[in-house]
Length: 121
Image 1: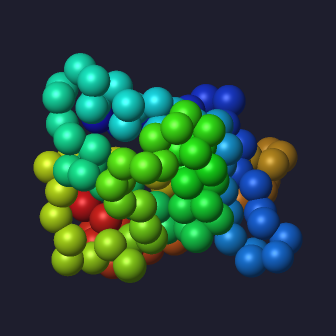
Image 2 (image 1 turned 30 degrees about the horizontal axis):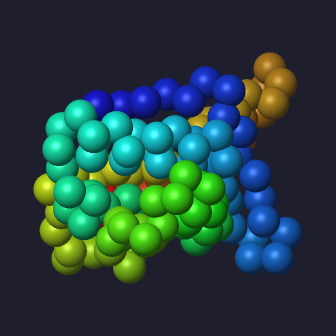
Image 3 (image 1 turned 45 degrees about the horizontal axis):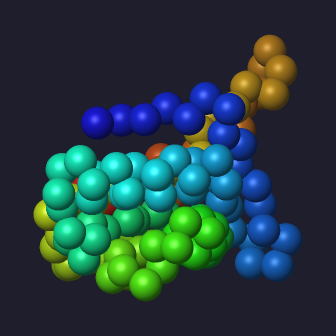
């Protein structure tokens, strides 16, 4: 399943220079809750991976806001999560190509790296 968060916008954390997408983080946390409630997948069998540390932080904040932080939902960067297994893995890509004008596009960062994408999948 692929979710396209149309109104989501990436943000650059000025301190860490890492990217996050608050709306996408919220959708991911809602999806975790839905999967737990509707598909009866235990929280400790749901993992969330993302290429960006800032997105990890945003997702953790959203879990606290929804009072889900006490469950053992594992969240990490693609590299940190490598080798682990869960019944359900959600991949939060954060970024998308943006057309800034008729001749300029902004790339999609880590997501464009084939090796990182392969590890994610």
